[in-house]
Amino acid sequence: MKLIKKIPVVIVILALLYGINYAWRALPIISGYGSKMLCSCVMLAGRQPDDVIKNELGRFPLTLGSFSANFTDSSATGSVFGLAVKKAVYRKGLGCSLINEISEDEFRHQHFTIAVPPPVNTDTIPWPLGDKLSDSLPTHIDFEKLDAVIQDAFHEPGPEKLRRTRSIVVVYNGQIVAEKYAGGFDRKSRQIGWSMTKSITNALVGILVRQGKLEINERAPIDAWKNDDRNKITVNHLLHASSGLAWVENYGAPSDATNMLFKKKDMGLFAAGHRAVYEPETRFQYSSGTTNILSWIIRQKVGNSMYHRFPSQELFYKIGVYSAVMEPDAGGTFVGSSYSFATARDWARFGLFYLNDGVSNGERILPEEWVKYTVTPAPAAPKGEYGAQFWLNAGAPGNNINRYYPDAPTDLYLAEGYEGQNVFIIPSKKLVIVKLSLSQGDYLDDNKFLADIVKAFP
Image (tube, rainbow, N blue to C red; front, side, top):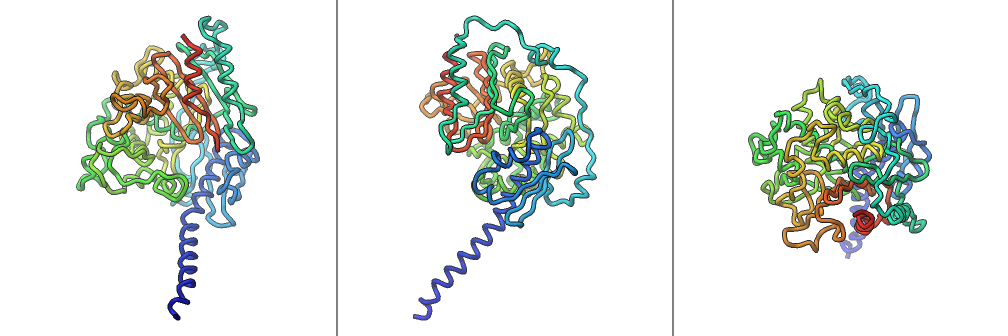
């Protein structure tokens, strides 16, 4: 009888211990996410702190946190009930980084050589290398239908269903034919790409392949993998998100992904430290970890003296993209899975670059056949839904039922990010469609959105 009476007490103690342990793991993620977003949206994107706190950080559990921006030292700080304090610091040309597993003094004394943008006035340069648009538009487009679709995409379904579309740009046959922005945003507003950054990582790997510095079928150059079963993992496996490494990509709770993004100094090395649980290319596992391993590999191949200039000098500036900023972790490696900002037009330029097979202004930047490789379904992707760091609409062989966008063309492929960031590329229709948003609760029906846009074109 005495033992029975003690059971409720034991249960309460166990529950309390579990709650303390969960809070210990979860609170730094809340404060880390909030301080990083506040820092980037304010210091890099130029928005007001109150607006970011209200919108980006205005839902549970982020509302448990307290966040503030400090313009004196270009930083943002977050905490939860005064605990789990996290700080993100802005550096010109590099955006914001969370200070994890490193002292702030050591972080601020890091020195990197960043790219210097060329002295160009994009308003005087014709699109796509500049922002000067043609006065004439194609006559065979149903602009009334196109405008109706775009207007509807900005419609809010209700106060608790926040679609919050912020930018849409439609490029047809290389020309901007439609463009709309929500209040507070315009063509010069930098916006986060989240996991669309993975597709930028694809391009950076492709550039190294063309330069002869990397082979996709070679074993991934990770020293710690040389003497165990991870030595079978190739760059190709990492690009296909089929490395076989143990990984949990869950953003609703403490997980490998959230621990990496909000607690770790060297994200790629953290991900590389995970054990192998499957043979490579036998199981598809969408993983921000494997993308950051790729980002770490890029840094080793490029070398520190060139690395922080590499994306701009070898990719962005060559395709007319001047707003893009990739943000590094506290160790200085770009967070190739998640952290990049660019204007909607620059995201459209990136999509157009792929539509044009990796060629810009007559210069081949990606290897021949690289885009074809990119949009070939990964063998382990069960629905044919993933290529090399891009999502696909191809469907499994002989089965179109499982396509994510059944009413859109099968050759559609896309860069996709959290809360509704998309660069849709439809080669058969010569279309690139950019949609940037802060969707929470009622995402736009992208299948219908795309199908209706396509109907406006021949």
